[in-house]
Length: 200
Ligand SMILES: CC(C)(COP(=O)(O)OP(=O)(O)OC[C@H]1O[C@@H](n2cnc3c(N)ncnc32)[C@H](O)[C@@H]1OP(=O)(O)O)[C@@H](O)C(=O)NCCC(=O)NCCS
Image (cartoon, rainbow, N blue to C red; front, side):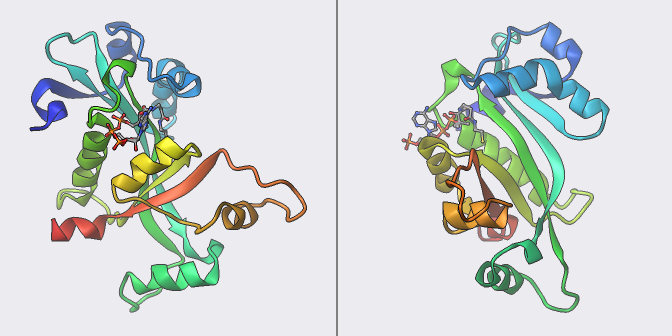
C-alpha cells in the first residue's frame, strides 16, 4: 500500500498552495527556508521546479516536497575507473561527454511523517516519473547532492543510489578541493541508474 498515492494528492508547489497550507517543516532549516521562500522564484526563473504531496484528509498539510532540475553527469570530470564504468553502462556508438539525468535539488519529508517510508515512496514516484515512456527527453540517471549525514546517505543507499565518487577524499579533490586542505564536504554526489527500473 502506498501512503502517498492513496492518501495524498500531488501538486506543483505554488505561492497559492503555500498560502493555503501550514508552514512546511522537515527539520532542516535550509530546506524549510527554501520551500517556504525560494522555491517558487526558482520555478519562475526556470531553475528548478518544486512539487509536493498534500494530505487528503487535511489539505493544509504538506507531507513531503521536492525540487527537480535538468542535470547531467559529466563523465570526463570523474576519476578514470569511474568514467570507464559509466561508459560501460551504455552503448558506444556515439560517446557522450555528459550523461543525461535529473537532479533532485531538494527533498524533505514533513517532521510528523519521517521514518514511515514516505521519503522512499517519493523516490519511487520520481523514478517512475522519469522512467516513464511519456518522458519528453532521455533521462538515464537521477542525481542527488545528498546531505553528508550518515542517516541521509543510508536513506539514499537503501533506495538504490550509489556514490559517484568512491571516497570523500576523491570527491573533495575532483570537485576542486586542494590536497593540503582538510577534507570537508557538506554533500555527497549520488546517482540512481533508471535502467534498473527495467528489471522491476
Ligand atoms: C532524509 C529524509 C528525506 C528521509 O525520509 P523518510 O521518509 O524519513 O525515509 P524512509 O522512511 O523512507 O526511510 C528511512 C530510512 O532513512 C534513513 N533515515 C533518514 N533520516 C532518518 C532519521 N531522522 N532517523 C532515522 N533514520 C533516518 C534511515 O536509513 C532509515 O532507514 P531505517 O528505518 O531502516 O533505519 C527525511 O528524513 C528528511 O526529510 N530529512 C530532513 C531533510 C533532509 O535531510 N533531506 C535530505 C536532503 S538530500
